[in-house]
Amino acid sequence: MLRLEKNGEAFVCITLAGARGSVPQEVGAKMVVNAAGRACGTVGGGRVEEAAIQHARELLASKPEAPCGLIEWNLQKDIGMTCGGVVSYFFEVFRPAS
Image 1 (tube, one colour):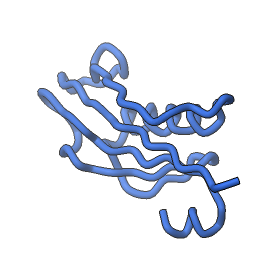
Image 2: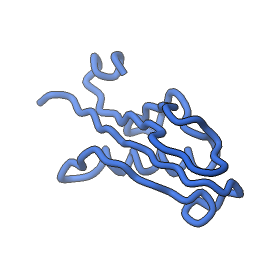
Image 3: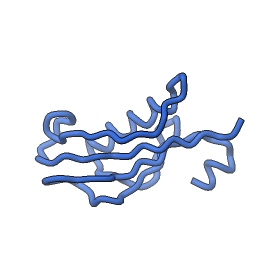
């Protein structure tokens, strides 16, 4: 995050804020995603992580700028995974000062 900030690059920090049932990662896990989709860390892997990266990239591309926010996904219904749980992710957008 410090390197991205120093380079003036926007990014999203994703935190697994909540989990119920069978989920692929523990609460508190973090991942950082930039506009190109490059990531550091993990918030669950597979399809759910792919969805989180895509959502982060959409936040970075949004005009007007999207605020930070919490999103909840049912892993079976919303993501198409076999896990039977529900995850909540907090998306925190960081943009360079203008």
